[in-house]
Amino acid sequence: MLKKFRLLVVIFVLLLASLACRTLQGTVNPQSTPMPAVSVVATQAVDPAIPIQASSALAEQELLVTLYERVIPGIVSIQVVTSNGGSQGSGFVYDKQGHIVTNEHVVDGQTEMQVTFHSGLKAYARLVGVDKDSDIAVIKVDVPESELVPLTLGDSYQLKVGQKVIAIGNPFGLSGTMTTGIVSALGRTLPSNRQTASGGFFSAGDLIQTDAAINPGNSGGPLFNLNGEVIGINRAIRTVSSTAMGEPVNSGIGFAIAINIVKRVVPEIIKTGKYDYPYMGISSVDDLDLSEIEALGLPQYTGAYVTTVVPGGPADKAGIRAGTRDVGLGPNLKAGGDLIVAMDGVPIKNFDDLLRYLINNKSPGDTLVLTVLRDNQKLDITLTLDKRP
Image 1 (cartoon, rainbow, N blue to C red):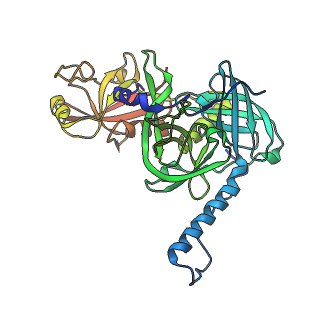
Image 2: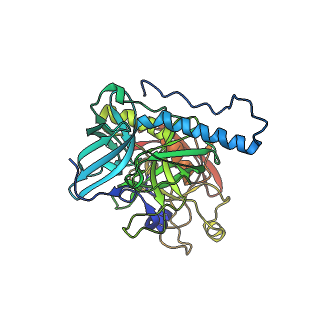
Image 3: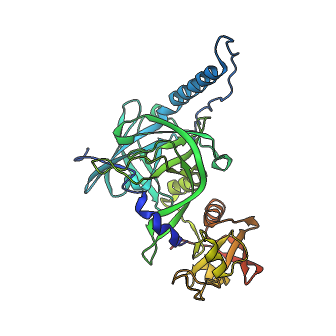
């Protein structure tokens, strides 16, 4: 699916592939044993001599200490050599076969990779496969099984805004660094790492926004809930400032790939070396102001408005319409297009909702029922999804 053009106005502040990894000087030569969940229920009676607030703070402190000690053996630092020097990032153990999950942009252009475990053990790694659309990579190491501590994967569909989360990784080369924050928003969309034939970028969806401190080197590391389950892979930050060395500075807005995407993508990468995303073949916009909504003649404020339909694509074959009538809003926003308001009966408030539903529930070859508003009439249109070209 083509990236909605409104994202172009923020690309200059999105630090994705290269900015979420730290540059190095020179060069450097489904879980088989799930981690036990960390209980969030305090069973000890509260000492009446300890104020309630202090007792709660101590209980949370103990929870975080216990969580860190249990998961840190499964978190690794990754050093990458490229033709231009090198970079570093983070990752975590996926299974007892030695598969490690990280970001695609961490290993992009690699000629050699070295993984460092919390125990101090170092091992060379080989690339298994990547998915540029979601920014996920799988690498593999051959080490003693005792070094492999797979982390438990959670369910990102159970996340709520306001829940506490924990990031652990390798920011600025400081391995094993732990930071905390909350889920700031769900279902965010960013440009993917893969270009379209027209020179734009596809969209990556279902990203978790968090204010947990994420800095260069955190990329590829896990984001946890309080049960010690991985609920995301730290991917990018949005920032407007940088250090004297040109490295981005955390602004409290970070993004992580939702773990339910990881659970779909990683097994396929291990099996085939790649993952194919479902493809509709449209561009859409949803951040419309009142004057634009009125000019376009839209009957409601929510939904994903179709601005472009790729010739010969699934949406085109199904008869989805893009806007064609000039109403003075510029060449990229014309009236007469379909407003997508539901997919398979699931309400769609915006493009983020559309993409989240599509990539979590559909695969190439599946059918999809779109409910659209066209000329103020509601229509159900069935299309067959393809894979992204």
